[in-house]
Amino acid sequence: MNDVELAVHIADTAGRLLLDLRETGRFEGKALGGEGDRIANALILETLRRERPRDAILSEEEVNDTARCSVERVWIVDPLDGTREYSEGRTDWAVHVALAIGGTAAIGAVALPGLGLTLDSANPLPLPATPDRLRMLVSRTRPAAEAVAVAEALGAELVPMGSAGAKAMAVVRGEADIYLHSGGQYEWDNCAPVAVAQAAGLHCSRIDGSPLTYNHANPWLPDLLICPHDLAGNILRLVGDLSQAR
Image 1 (cartoon, one colour):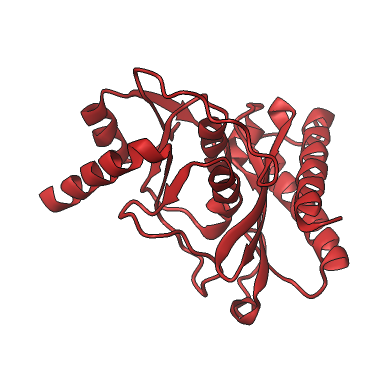
Image 2 (image 1 turned 180 degrees about the vertical axis):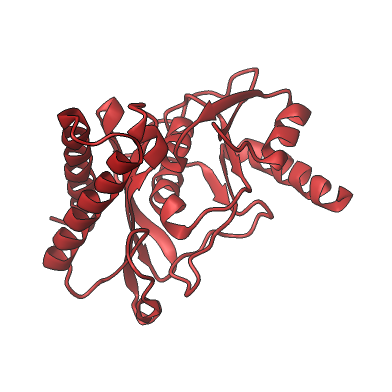
């Protein structure tokens, strides 16, 4: 398998494992989420260590070993993005498997097991036309103030959704138009979604317009913007105006 095929295989397999676990009914609530994180992480790490033993790994569920920073190829994974949504029986959760090469989100697969879909960076979907009224994705529980303010300025409809991967893939799939987040994330929250979104031809950046880069000693990566290129300039300007007004 090449790297993309491996990423898809791992994301698919972990997603099926998580669905099977939920269907057993042996765990509920936080216990279900915790067990899901554990078994998906174990599968992902076992597969990567077997198939790509020379590559480094950064996983949400593992201790951050900064020795990876000296390695060119680093797999950045979130075994279960949207643990709450998964535990609640919803579909807006994901499995992220990405390969960063030289600090760039080079390859990614995002499984949406609840929808029976896996999107990857080698098979981009055609981007739909932008609708007359824009749709802005926000957190179900903690909508970012910047996103709400920008949506108001654009006259955009707010679309609450769960995991970061589900939100990013909603833009890729044409279910929404803008994913603007400023409430805090880590590299594993967005590396795979960014790889897929970039391959689809979408704009991906920090909310100050700077590039998204990966494999830093501190994996904190608190904000991002994913949207069509023709919307990016105006959105970044509005975010900048908000920052200056504070």
